[in-house]
Length: 231
Image 1: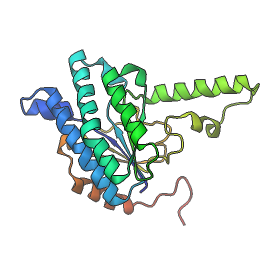
Image 2: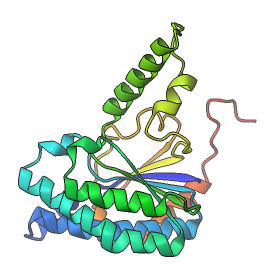
Image 3: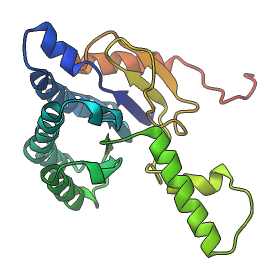
Image 4: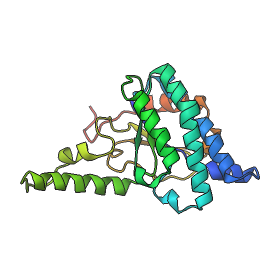
């Protein structure tokens, strides 16, 4: 497995079950992110994608959204960036950055600048991300480019792929959703066509490194044919 994508669901429910504010669950979820990054590095993954905040999450209360953004900014500056600098990890962000706070955008800019030339594992953080929005964005960019060059041929996926947020990254080999629901919630709809799907009833703050090691062992037992006939 080269690329594992994780849908980190259940932070708010984790806190509510304990009589805490929902933001407390998001803070615990941030701690789980570091455990996931450490485990992925131990497994030798090339990429780890983390679905941190969707476009639909903007519908939540302003208090919760700002709380989440503040937690992410603090986590990036105080936890993930120092770890990435020690380990040589590259941190990459995907999504509609026009809808996040200036504080979080500043943190993202610092992390991008500091890790852009690193050659270790790539950690992709999806913020304000929506799969449909990504596809529409890519199609519009491609059409604009084709019109500028007088190219009126039909669009192919090979032409579209470089306009996706994940350009130059391998497609996820597996998608792993926490929180008990069995859906992808719009996460990388084109890139996950042949991804193996795994679902956990655990809420994301309860994630432990051993969970990822067990998942990797399960994945290793799967024969992947990509539509071809198995010999």
